[in-house]
Amino acid sequence: MLTYKQVRQHHLERLNKSSTRGPQIVVSGFAIIILIGTILLTLPIATENRGGLSWIEALFTATSATTVTGLTVVNTKNTFSLFGEIVILILIQVGGVGFITLSVVLFRLIGRRVSIYERSLLSQTLGVGASEGIVRLTLTVLFITLTIEFIGALILFMQWVQIMAWPQAAYFSIFHAVSAFCNAGFDLFDGVEDAILQATRMNPISVINLGVLITIGGLGITAVYDLIVWPRARHLSLHTRLILPMTFFLLVIGTMLLLLDETFVAGHALANTSWGERWLLAAFSIVSSRTAGVTLVPMADLGQASQLVILVWMFIGGAPASMGGGVGLTTVAVVLITLASNVRGYQDVRFLERTLPTETIFKAVAIITVSTALVISVTLLLILLGEGELFPIAFEVVSAFSNTGYTLGITESFDPLGRIILAFTMFWGRLGPLTLVVALAQRDRKSLIRYPEEKIIIG
Image (cartoon, rainbow, N blue to C red; front, side, top):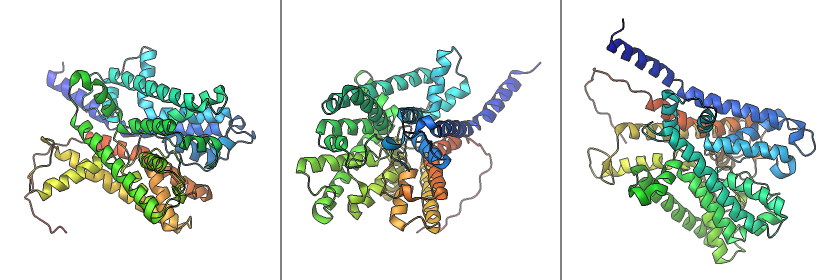
């Protein structure tokens, strides 16, 4: 007969063995979704001319949609049929909400119980520390997502129904509301000169609505949930108190830099706009640059300083466990807070009367280091393959890594190998930081051995 200690040890071994499969499940799940999307987009029914896409074009599009990036090698409106567009929309929704979240909803619908391991994996992907009540939170996440998308679509519908027939307005509203909230960047406009796009960029209600959808999607469900329950709980987590000021700071600084460049230096993209429209479009471009990629102002028309600002903002990205990508707002914030604490001579890292755990700092450094190495390596590889010049390639790679979708217009010129490399970058940008955090969170090695310290020269 097994003792209590043996039973407990056996249970822990099983849990640790299954927990190491967490990143594999996440990666495999998204890969299967991309594969299914690729197959569907190669069907003749998916394109307007019934000719179907090539496997490379379908793979690139499915990867871009599932990773909510928005980079395209074909024009979405002119290439895909209604079936193809709906496939892309479903991939965006699944990629934005997360297949793990949808799996839990499906389990509840068919009456299947969610295991302890699945609850633990959910808590990691949603950015929640504890797994208690995680199933209820997951259902709340889906309800909040659908509610926000419905409200955003309704506002867009009321604006677009004035310039198009109501069935088209309803379809356009749903597609763009989902794309904006999921920070996907896909649209149904026929280029930057499209009449609907031009009417949209001159409509403050539509622009603000899209900007709010993008911002909420980029905050992350943890912060959104905190804000929803704040009137009753009167408490915001440290995570949310860090996300909100960082979001506001990046918006203000980025908008001012774009206005400075476009007003006094470059003056191309926003030269013929009124001051009100210029402020609104500059702010929207910054909001969208942090992983949404909804293009109301062509990136190629901006000055180089503005393009550089957007490149940096794309790399930073949105909040963890959000629809956005990039290295993450909190990752950059933790590094800056660590730097500030070190300059002040503190023995620990402090923020808002709290001390940040050492493991949090290690994760932030690991994510930034690995992400920077990836962006540099992919940029160098594409340059060696002759895909283009340094800055346009770097801009494209950062856009793919951060799942933004902004482009300087060179995506379609990539050869098949370049497209595959860019698709891999989108895939890593969506899942790499997440799986890295999950893997690091599951490594809890205790050691009784301590080695003597020895300093090395830094700087």
